[in-house]
Amino acid sequence: MSDVNSWLLEGDPSVRWQVMRDLTDAPGDEVAAQRARVATSGHGRRILELYADGAWAGGACFPSRDWRPPDGPIGDPDGQPWTATLPTLRLLREFGVDPADPRVAAAVEGVREHCRWEYDDLPFFDGEVEPCINGGTVSVGAYFGQDVGGIVQRLLGEQLDDGGWNCEAERGSTRSSFHTTICALEGLLDYERAGGALDVTAARQRGESYLLQRNLFRRASTGAVADQDWLQFSFPTQWHYDVLRGLDYFRAVVGTPDPRLAEAVEHVRSKRRSDGRWPLENTHPGLIHFELEEGDGAPSRWNTLRALRVLRWYDDASKTSVAEGQS
Image (cartoon, rainbow, N blue to C red; front, side, top):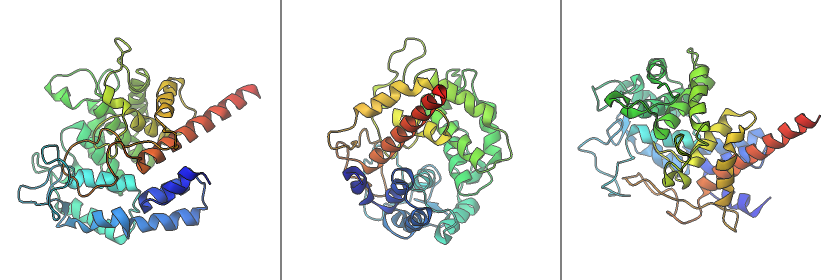
């Protein structure tokens, strides 16, 4: 086993079980046993213990006005807070917590019954009005077994002519946003994989084409890098786009990698340090429940896991495609 994989396996159970599944090909029963620990130990348990009265931090997208951090403010109080129900459920989904765990199921049921959006007081799994928020809600709803068909129908109706989505569309924008598009795509893919009744494949593929036509980070008009921040890798990504998040999405889609991913993949390779690890970068400011890693510039287990599995998928699938072409 490589030194990097050994280091990854020393991390939180939420990282460890995904390393076992995606990088070391551990037996399925060992992977399942490690995944079961996410809800009962480490970061997953800490997150679940912060649930109260149908929500986290008393709100859907933002903490309630009377909520106070139990251990005092952690993170940047001037940034967007990441402690309410939506960002917390997104984090639990990233952890891969088992939806069938009784503690998890009870919390999700409580959210369904009691949590309501700050906008129009709508029930949580009925969604909001912004597609970036709704994409995240579809993703967690599908993952945790909730009916999000109504939100999906709305997303399908809000897809723009260029194939993507943009939260500014309601204010007149006709051009898509990478940030909003990746949120919508992740939601549609999770919905599709959960066996959703609506056919979302064509819409999802149009959204993928929007990203691919731009090599995942370039402007369609000039070919210039659209945003230098997208070349840095954050975790949690929250609603923000970056190249690693985009590539991890296409890895999840599976299949032969599109040639237009090549430049983004090589950028990921270039970010690997001499010790084989990737750093945490560009952490999005805001209040958090607790620190997951040591901070920007330090080696990141989450970024290293995601980068290694993207590269493994890309390299293996590319080799298979070449071999099939030569046979």
